[in-house]
Image (tube, rainbow, N blue to C red; front, side, top):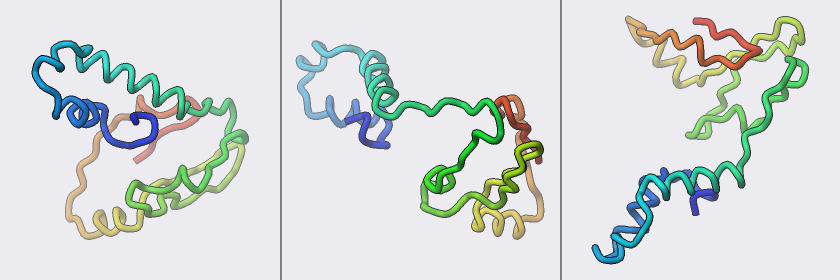
Length: 120
């Protein structure tokens, strides 16, 4: 079930163990052990694609550029192999920013993939 759903591991654990008696729950592995097993199943069935070694190897599929709400997120891609610029966002998020009098940001630049720089 874990590898075919976006439901959290905790929620899956609660759904499966909720109807069980206390005696049955005592005999089960710990919640942490079950969560780790679910994560392994998800990684096996949905492996993370390898990171590109160059910008020319990077191909953005349509599914990669959609929000969970189904809104397109790719605002710009100049496809320049030397100085590639990719902008992600949604039209609805841009409208929220445009309507806001103040913006507050978090500078988590260290989380950018190796080939990229994160800019504000």
